[in-house]
Amino acid sequence: MSAFMLNRRTLLKSAAIGSLGLTTGLLTQRAAFAADLTIGIIYVGSRDDYGWNQAHAVAAKALAAVPGVKVVEEENVPETVAVSKTMESMVELDGAGLIFATSFGYYSPFMVDAAKKYPDVQFRHAAPLWSDKDPKNAGSYFGYLDQAHYINGIAAGLSTKTNKLGFVAAKPISSVLSNINSFTIGARKVNPNATVQVIFTGDWSLPVREAEAANALIDAGADVITCHVDSPKTVIQTAESRGVKSAGHNASQAALAPKGFITGAEYKWETIYKQYADTLAKGGTLPNFLSGGYDLDFVTNTPYGAGATPEAIKAADAAKVEMKAKVPVYVGPLKDNTGKEVIPAGTVHAPYDPWIDQINFLVEGVTGSIT
Image (cartoon, rainbow, N blue to C red; front, side, top):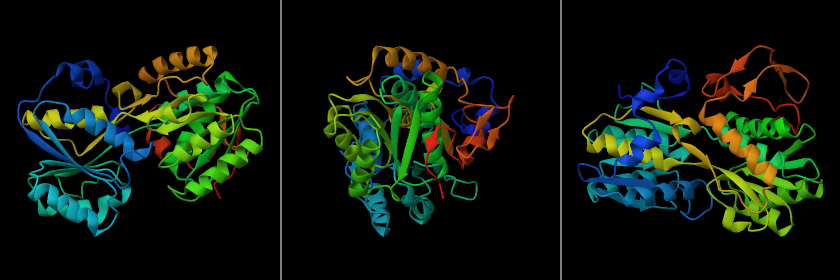
């Protein structure tokens, strides 16, 4: 398999990641690809949603600027047979050799069926869903944003005056819970008096409920608001309009909150996209699973805004160094918010420990329930 085949489980077994050619330095030295390549990128929403879709669109723009690469895009494609038609068009009319399907519901059956129909085309999906039962020309890629949310928490914990932080979340699934927990652990590391109140809206894109949740958290005393929803635009704008600070998610929302934005947890899909394109252009074989975090430059944090205090910036910068060095966030003893010990003393869960993918609790310091 390619040296790029990484997930939490395989990273645990590798002690020589630096020798795999996955560093940012190697990537930036590759100014051009050896062969022309057309890449199709499909979005479930608008490319300028200030969220999940925009994070991919930013990477697409960077990829399109690389000599030898042509990018074709289509936005607002629903998770129905419509995405099958879009993929078919990109292959047959545009000559795409690689397709990125960026929404969760695109994978099965749509992308899997497309991969079977076009065995000479590579298909990759932005969620860790691929298994060895799926076509070999299909695969998954993902960035572990919990690491960047930990840094968000560090900055938020030193930017609050009330010690009350608010988190608007879509659903209590493990990827969301790990972000909430990492944010909370970061905040309480630098500010033990900080607490996080979470409100779940019930779905990924419910702007009205997101605004209601943000307002409720602010009414309860939160002076920093963050979130995990597809488009944080509503949450960030609500916080700004109420005169409180905010921390972002998915992409940069800095422009939406010129007075209160602190920083944000961002996917850096550009790193992954360029690795895929470079591998294909050089005649290599793509991995079926590619994942990573801060150390592999797969996630990052938005540049600091006016809401970040000098103390917050200093501590967050130090936390970035820790994340790049794979310093663990989940270290025992640690209790959940019901008082149950979830990590005993002496136990450490490294950044790519599969345990993190199975988190089903909220840590101590969080007000809220997953039931």
